[in-house]
Image (cartoon, rainbow, N blue to C red; front, side, top):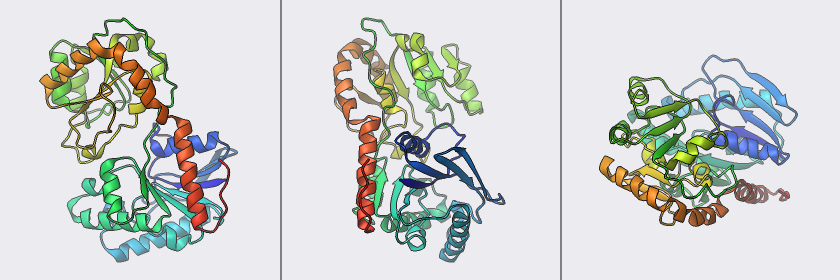
Length: 364
């Protein structure tokens, strides 16, 4: 089966959900045309890194946050459609996966194709003030034009249900198969594995280290005054981006994974599960989140939320005592969050969308 995936992601960036979905499809033998982030003034280009993967890039007329007036939306849609059709000859059997909330025009321009709309950011909350109303309108138009919608958080599910009931949750997954960590270790430290940037709750992170707990920071760093302050702390240990498999010594010292989102960042309150959350659980680490309102429902002992620094430190200490006892619950919970389960869910959605367009379903 051939998939056209529309995104605002460059293939070369560290993987996010759109690239992970593309890689999952490629691993199952599908052909993928991946439309990357567009920039004003860029010429249309296509390259084929492998027989099954083609990358497309090009320009746009308007940044998505400037699509406030419907007439400008239509002009930009005509431009984008023209560029897409120049880069690939779209067949009716092609499946469209759109990660772009403002691609409201897809149903009109591709009336016979199965379209699945995937929403993995809270575009309404993050929109600049003049764009909030039009962001909601574009999101709802894209949602109603799709055959089905897959979303990554409880908040976004509620947003889509304002427009259509054709929606279900589609979370990231654990790419690593769960293995029981070495039992009986003291585990005094805490792990932070992921992007190190302005979305971090600095006050809590600093407070944990001020209290004497070492935090191991592993990931890509976005340079700023805030990240410099955090990473220069005496109890910070910093590593370049490294797979968890290669961090055995660090893992053996840590009792939990810290996911300290800054609640003032407009994107963060929508988070239900971090893209890296299931991966961290698959190595046995309970997750410690800031007090997000939409955190994933899970059995006790797997996912914690803290109210402030003192509460966070208390929960870390509790996890140190219960780390080994939590492992059976983590293993059982992850059964429903594997790559096989997500692929099965995606293909069920795709087949339903194909049948809605009059095409026959295809075996996964």
